Length: 373
Image 1 (cartoon, rainbow, N blue to C red):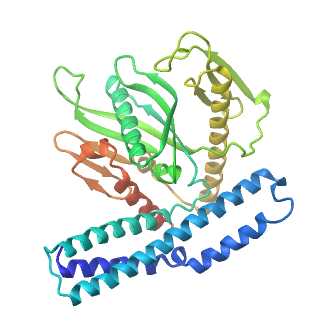
Image 2 (cartoon, rainbow, N blue to C red):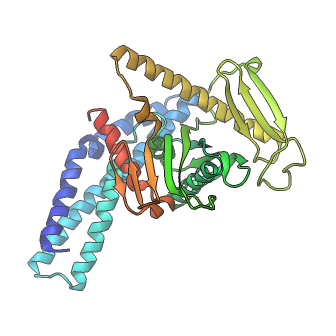
Image 3 (tube, helix red, strand yellow):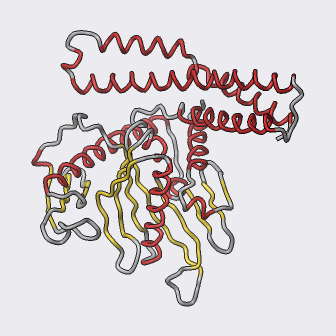
């Protein structure tokens, strides 16, 4: 990296910190934290457990953001001072001190970029775990295989982020892959990142299941909702729920196919169906399924509210735009292109191996632009 490139990157870091404004305003963040801590110190604070937990989490998130903001500002200041020192001592490209500075600059730039992106994750549920369901589309075995490829992609991405993954339901394809799979990814801003993955994903490749080696197009739908906290109160009358039990299938340990431990819950008023079969007992499966059902009901209510607002505003949406969000080409060339943000990369295999963060960042920036921020 030449001197002018280093100076450009230092200037870019400084501009980013300035542009972030209130996100990096430690004084303002401290004021917000003090207000929350004042509420937490009041007598009877824990009488309302749901509100108390929410406020405590907000305080914890603010503390983390304050520390990150301080570290980012300090890192930028230290790098600027160190650069002036290197230039004053006439250190040039290729010397150990120069290379060490380049490494520090790269790490700082990546950390600040991540902090910038996470400042966009300010939605009510962005900090929650994500419940992801992948459905194979029309296309038989190829679509089932594609659905499993997507599951592997998200699992590998989650692993790279240090997230915890748990499969709650899975229906295998007749020949290969999965017809549907539901899993939970828990970690910092899991839902905030994964929410941009909701939609239809299209794959074009030479089918490994076609003896004539013809090119096939496969579709799979990805659905992402936030998992609500266990103490989140959503009232569901027992007479609104129908529970069916059946024997679990697929991977699941010693209880598979021996007892009717798998649970299917149907919310009669809305027709929402959730299933869970991977816990050890019917009771545990029911508890997990009920939490998923509550999460889906809240997500449905929020979506209906959003659609009512859009109707009032006269917003028109193209059905095609919302139904297909990303293309993955493996033949006749390699390309992954997100149809919303315009992000594309020729290294499709790296994306399928879990390198999703750059695409997600581009989608989050696109959402910010759509909101006019």
